[in-house]
Image (cartoon, rainbow, N blue to C red; front, top):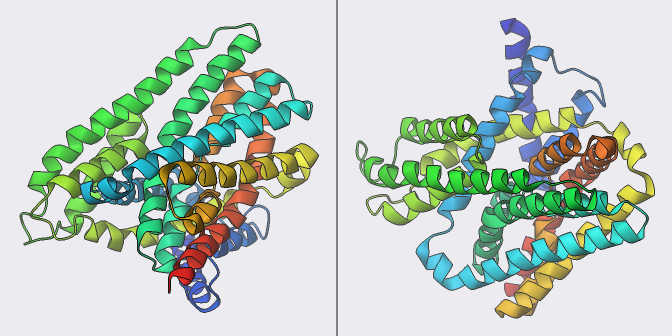
Length: 388
């Protein structure tokens, strides 16, 4: 690997990230959308300026950034917040997943797609983008019940989504005349194993970190926990997002000697996030948008409507104030890597439908990656503005 192109590209990307951050602060546009757009310009769909040396780092950067996000999301699930919002988080997240899966699957089936494909796409539609959602919240600088609610939902949403996808894959195999019980077993291991791993790391870390420097874990401790969690999760073939979330939740609740358990991760996170979103944008293939056609447009409309409806219904059941439930689903529109991962698994299990599943998922993800953070920011500002 040549160092000169790598270092030059890293320096340029960090400066682009700084510019995007500055523009975002002055124009109130989401930094995530700006970074993705910049990535598209310099990536394969634009000027194609990213050297191969930089592309090879994408997997490492994405795992690091997303594991940090998982730790921070888990740390938002403190006992105080769960006591205040736990019922709403559970009801809204379950309603959004169930309604999204039902509406998207039924709508696509009525539009003429084969039942197995419609069912799989309905499950893929349940996935979210925790990194984009969390960064939009941080950029807004917002706090309060609505923000706590959104963070809690995002923290557990992908666990429900993985389970829904596995059940849908089993159903799709049955509709196709096969058996897919192995996928369900694999999902239970991915979720259950991740919870166990998060517990094995989070429980001792809650008592051991933050002892060398009074009241705060060191940066070395923070990045060590992130790397250890991500590496073991990948080695064990479990979800590093769920493992990081569980570890973060345990540390935040059990570490009584910490003033702020993840203060150092917050400092470390942004450089990784800048590179993550820029390279994610560089990898987006805009030509896929032309390939999704009317079915892709229908998928986008159905998913958007279903998440908004699911947020409203769940909020109504949980007794959430009207303003918050009106905007809850809109704040949860971002969709990214988890959905693409589901589509890759579905394409492997159903090769006869692989091209359709991948093209439609990746093409619609481009749209949701760009407009999702905008909707999250709008939702937060509307709710926060109405309270002032």
